[in-house]
Length: 115
Image 1 (cartoon, rainbow, N blue to C red):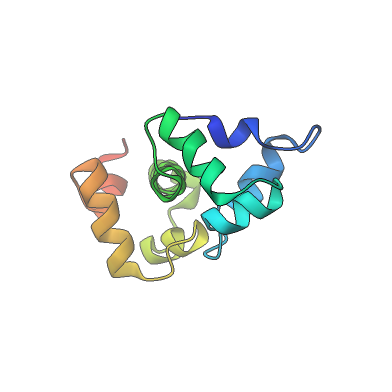
Image 2: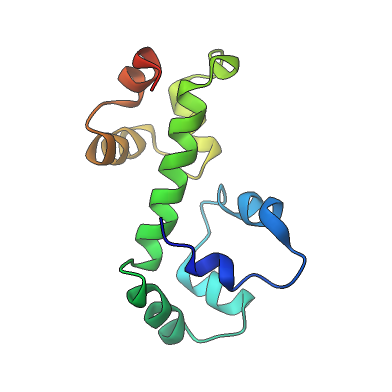
């Protein structure tokens, strides 16, 4: 996956800060650009150079975190919808559809298959 957004993080912010923002349903290209004091247009240019859209990168990162949680046996008590909501997908139907489009199976099937 592209790491262009990580390169924009201020010195010393580290992985924890990036992961803290990823679950925020309000995370948007506008917010990312403003946080890094660059224009949206420049942000889009950076992402295009990596072959991604900003929104696509956010979605893919969130889905990857959801998949990690779904296959983690320590998170079995969390409902599938809660895992989606935890990573920025407050609508369970939208989460399920987006997950299936990327991974070819429903979140529930991914949990059952464990990988």
